[in-house]
Image (cartoon, rainbow, N blue to C red; front, top):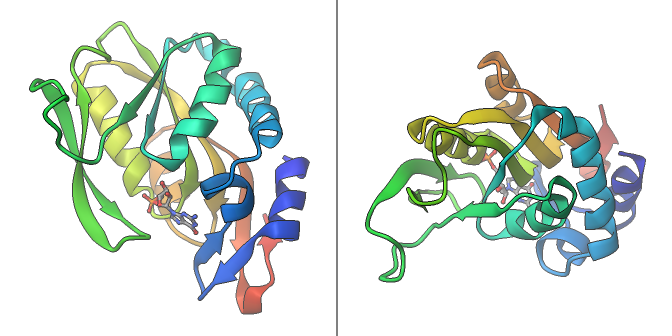
Length: 189
Ligand code: 5GP
């Protein structure tokens, strides 16, 4: 998606060799107009799949998922990273290793909100090694739901998540695929 690529080039910052910081429009301050264009594009890509629910993970996926959901006209469910007393006891659980935080944590979704009649579209902000998306696909599978596909804003094509997910037969659609970030220079696939 050209608009997103241009924005990454204009405002993205490369941290080290493998982290792309897009705090000014996606991960901290959020450009809702851009999200709206992204939502429209996800709808164009997945409209034929008869999606009944969008599944994401807190926190950065939520904003993108909610805007996209307005096009699909379906609810958004987000996997929670912390156990809390106000979360139902009966949950689907998946283990996710966080690439940016360097630790493993459990993510949970109440069994009330995904079931075997659902066709689930997974949406997230970034795809790196694919652990977050795999965790979400695992939760959908536990519920007996169908995974319609995975919609990603920014895929880092030099990490192996995209390959892993596609090899599993999952349809991954990324709005921008970053091929390299050598010496702070961002290139796209
Ligand atoms: P994965 O599970 O695919 O290894 O990593 C995806 C998750 O890690 C995303 O939900 C995102 O929050 C975070 N992440 C991975 N790489 C980056 C990055 O380069 N920049 C930012 N802002 N987040 C990232």
